[in-house]
Image (cartoon, rainbow, N blue to C red; front, side, top):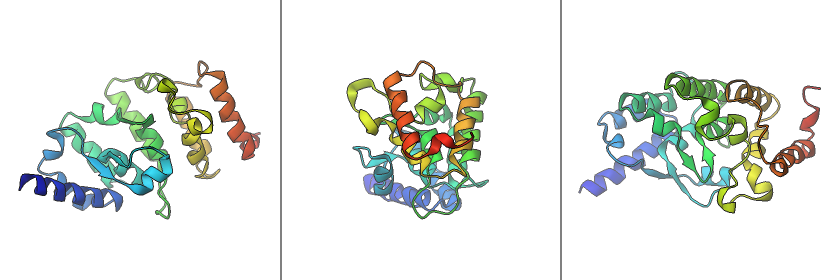
Length: 218
């Protein structure tokens, strides 16, 4: 049946995304059916654990971004190129899951995964927004560095340390990775978040201080 075929195709797409298999992804996307309706939701327990979200299913771009290595021609690059070809790129780049956005996901590395060039991935993400005529610091309603460190306050869903979960998992990448990512987000993503709620910025400072990260760069 059509529903069964769709489910099988989705499972194959999810497998290609998790293994960063661009060849399999290309074959599965060739029909163009992915762009014919709403973005399918893909089960990914590891991504749920990393983000601490309520949901366990994510849009395919989220799963692909999480497992991407940032190599030329990888599954993420292929998916984005296909989105552009089908005139869906703007909506894909702005996707949001419980306050998490794609550049945050590009900054993360799946547990036990090969090396991931997040700096290249986020740079290309910002370039793509700019090519679409969108200002990176305005797309998500606040500077990109803020949107990638602190989950939104609207609705009261993310309070206390839960609100800075993106920062915590970014810091887990280590001092060889996260400082250059933060610098990129500030320089090209709308600057420093001067208008962010002071109480939430205090949480950022507390997390940085607890990990001894405030000394980096001094």
